[in-house]
Image (tube, rainbow over all chains, first blue to last red; front, top):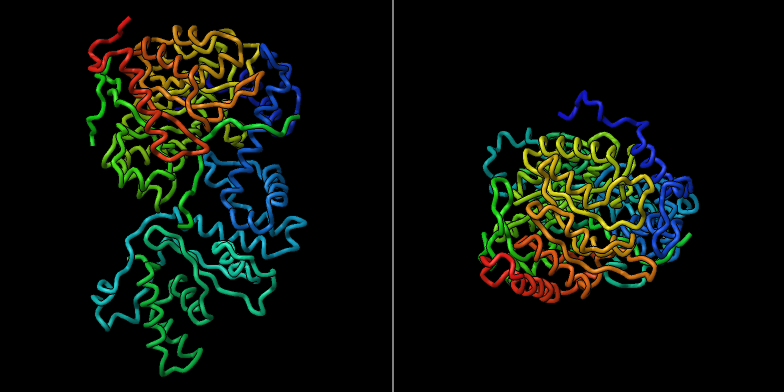
Length: 268
Length: 317
């Protein structure tokens, strides 16, 4: 649809297209050539009027980043955050129509860019905030219930594969970013940033419309990751048995599974 | 280069709450029903997440709600859940900020598909966006950018509106935006451009009274001339909002109550366009719902003063 052979099809060399290009450069790159296209206002100079758009562009996107990462903002303070947000706005122009996704690459930006990359807890705190936002409006899906699970004949248990709820996001952190998040959430003074001796396993998801996260023990993280990768329940039980006390492995697996179901982590 | 001062509004994007029926209120009948012209809905409000629970628990005297389409163009979760509940009880219209109808970039069909999917779910009374562009060359400035009022631009926008209307299978409603600059190449006034656009495409108009006031001040014309230049039968919605006065120019911030001058202009608009669905649009400094309901009631009162409480009166003067 829309592909017309009209002579009025958008012509990249049209005056209108060229004006939009100049105007966009004027806003994004502070190129002043578009001033020649603009009339002075009845009470104001043209450069001041163009500056309304230049200022608005940056202020609006900075505000979006602030709203999306409120604990990172609280953690580094307004001034340092403004510097970060401005750097992000200049480095990563928005490429999609919905501003919902504008700040999505901030954790990667923090990870790659000096000086922020030298403080890895910042990228990890941002990654946790992003995961909670993503869980907040991730796709809906009916969740697995205990009743539904009970209907599966025992002979088929070993072959059952579980599908995570679309809101579930699993990742590891190497710093105490989660502890810092909790401190901000509770309005407490955050602990000093530190590297963990071993990475912590975070699981973020949405339960009853509310995004949540928790830290998984090694065994649960392994079982979850394998389940998400599509391994059948029987294989996961075998892996648990191999990992520690084979006797209690089926019970341990059942307890994990029950926890996932009660939390709405699995798709029906 | 000024990096201070208020920024113009742009209402997309809020994840508020992340960490945590045909109503009979309208007292004024539609002025001039025509085949595809949407019904008069009465007096409404822009739906904001801050008010979800107050609306659902309190049954406020609001006839309808307008949503920012992009805030619900997400996969799922609370925004769509709340929207489903609100649309069970109130008529809803969809108002977008990213269609970029006047851009010379190719039409973004991914965006239109998402918009249509949302419309299929919401069944809005109409779908609106702005007569503006938001970017070219794949970039999005998330702003409502101004256009030159030239024949070339008009031809281009006409074709785009036709394309979008075909895709959506319904007429589009377009809003006049606040602008801070005018281009030397313009060949006609903004209202002439809008009148031509609606005549050639059959699109409807969302008349933002505040934006007319802001642009008239910024460019030095009489807002009454704007009102007189818009065809009487194409306006299906009014927006009322506040702004920030910077002495030499006004910025459309939508973060204040509606000012007296805009209320006066609203009265003129009602006199010309008749009973048109009216709403208060607050995008920042969102006050408690009761404050906005008071502004909605003020609009009701002004419209009733012009049209008569039963609305059959048409115009009183």
